[in-house]
Length: 404
Length: 229
Image (cartoon, each protein chain N blue to C red):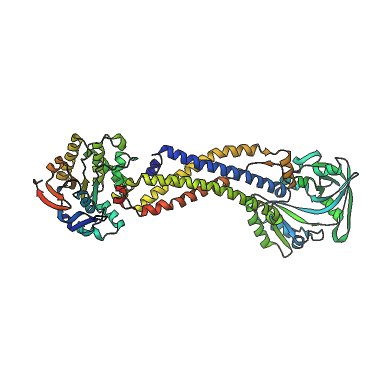
């Protein structure tokens, strides 16, 4: 009955209810769109700079953490394999060799990042095959390379051309090799496209003189929400020399950039929520003032003031929930549309994005937490606003209210 | 048995000139009475009724309902007391506009945590008693003044109170509706022994009251038993 009463009370003044609902839903739509766009950018950032390429977590030797030298490598033995297989959250893992080198072509040279990779094993995660813009995927037995599209342009080296790689190998040895370009790969992140050179893992071991040794092991998780937990679990079983690190540790500058950007979003959201707060507060004040007499009658006939306060609180909560639902219903198709059809920037803006190593687009996120977060915030605001009438209604005196 | 007893009951409204709305009133009302408190406007009828009903507190004196001193109860205890012991009928009906006749009458029983099955049975019987069995699902705005006041009577009786306080119950009704309402209340008093206390200056109510207490300037100037039940 209390719910029924609260529901019917909401619709006593339809125009006021509609205006309040529209105010709440507009604020919800704006904040959902903003959060969805921002989260989409973050997801894209993480995906193109971290997830696809670096993995959401890695195992490295502790010495490598302080000094990413080719000398600080790790041995991928059966114990380590067993430890990784023992963690259910881990979907897959593959050892890599990553180190810097100089790439030289007939016409140019450039510092590059060499990635020694088991292409077949990582295909599921990196999807190198889908990123080929020219040529064919390297395989384990190859002694050829794949280079990023940006690097290809810079070196003016296409499929079939030869590049020379020069670097320092294990324990001060010289690493040098001449490789034919088998394919050009295109990464979303221009920063990656401009410097990546993929070698089959065994060829990379030969190049650097690393027999059965690797610089890191890339970990892929079934659910990226489990990364932190999985990493903690791993660190409890890894020995003294190895450490598992998640993407936030691997790329702290990216994490900080996202955090800073999020703060800007929170300021904007705070302003929007202040609008909602005042809208709801105004509605509630009008409602209290209009129904003074009625509240008096209810207390006169024996309604406990706490119950009266709860009923009014319920009205405010129902109104807010309706606003959140309406806002979500409006924003969901918009977010879905821009998720399926990302917004691509014009040339100038694209340059700015590419300077940060990002794809110049906004693909809206459909993370359900964006919607639930709004609902929780609005409900908290409503509950906070309801404190005022709650306290006032707890002090209601029937006769005074009925005379009002 | 005394249901209501007031001892030296006074109410002074403070202001530039303090007003003695009720002045040293001593009265007692027995079970099953059908009593009218009458007097001109400003004589203190409503103030007296409000104090008896625990809606207002006296400046001095004592009100006892079923031997319980209302002055000694806290505000929350008073609310609970009203819910269990007193039924109210107001001049302007004061039904909850968003609830139907049935829900309005049921509401007090809901506050008393009476099970739904019992509530429904009682409310239907009460609305039938006041002649509104065909209007149970109508909202107050769909009822005439007389019908609304009959719902108010059903609501007042729903909680099985010790007595019903009615403040000018016929003031907003046409003569036919007023007569009809009086018939219902009179019958409930006679057949079910429900105690009614009215404040009124409607001669029709006065004529049908067993006992008439007249107030003037906050004091009882006469207390007459007109006829036996």
